[in-house]
Image (cartoon, rainbow, N blue to C red; front, top):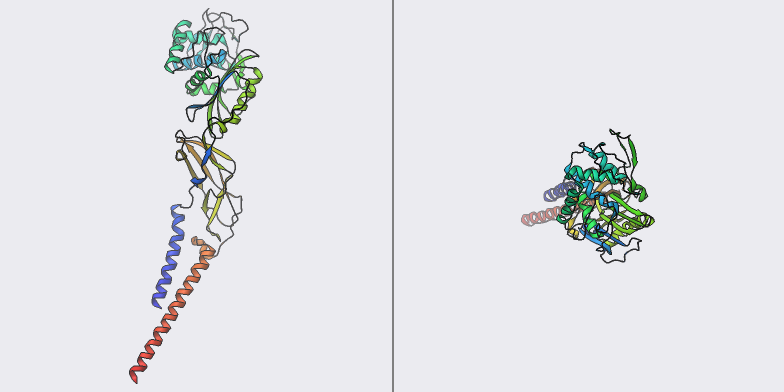
Length: 429
């Protein structure tokens, strides 16, 4: 009986320790990696767009996932200006005073201009805003001259930079994209140019600035400007940077960066129409997840992980998520996706749908998504042992085992007592 009581005590201690240790060390909260499954495929049916030449480049995977005549030489028009502005930001102090030359003030028929006059002094940053937001042609010439001393030398710098980036099918003969037979690029090259140029954080910021007021100069009044990119793309919510270009309503170009549900990319459109330039990006972005090989991390799945419950009839509750989440690791392997959970241990009673914590998705060591974790079922308050994270079911099972151990000990004790009595009786005869 003494042994039975010792065993019963050991069972109680082990039950408490084994119930509390998982809570103390946080086990039972890992995201179920079997739910990370492939999504998207290169070569999937591509959507129809109006642009004559286009590319969708995945910056997550460093590869093109959609192409349409991507190596055809085309006129870039004003998307040329992103390189001019990038080089200006890299080589000029933003507050540097730029004095407009006679060459910079030459009139370009029907083009957008600040209408600078010779000797007009502007800050470099104001000219960059004007070139990006309202596509001012004279601003780019003034910037080029400020960087290199002359427009010709700056154009050489532009082409030297293009060669360094590997853009073999691009040649620029001016700073602004003015139409010329020797001024050309391809969708593939322009994606590379866009990627490099918008590594400059200030250029990214300027590209999405909605409104800007250029201060008055020594020869001109202040000027309010609005963002032509946002207007031309109907304020498309997924755009992270970019620039428009056009020669007419039927000769338009566009380069943009975008991010949507964990996918990041660049879209270049050449030989498009004004209407196509507004609709084609939407079409391609909506197809991006089908065209890009990656992983769905969750789409309203059940039991993605679990959480411990304080004082609950059950000590764990399964957790669900809501909504699609994607990840695009460069390795293109599920092992490149990492999911971390942040769970606040709930206290019973818990109702199905209660918000219990958050999860964070990482690909290439960068966060690409997040979402909430919800209780997958109701959990009522438990009995007294639940304060030690022992569920009602476990309490019943352990209680039965303890009862059996004690009963067995009692039976064995009685048997031993009976044997002793019989032995004593035999000795006294």
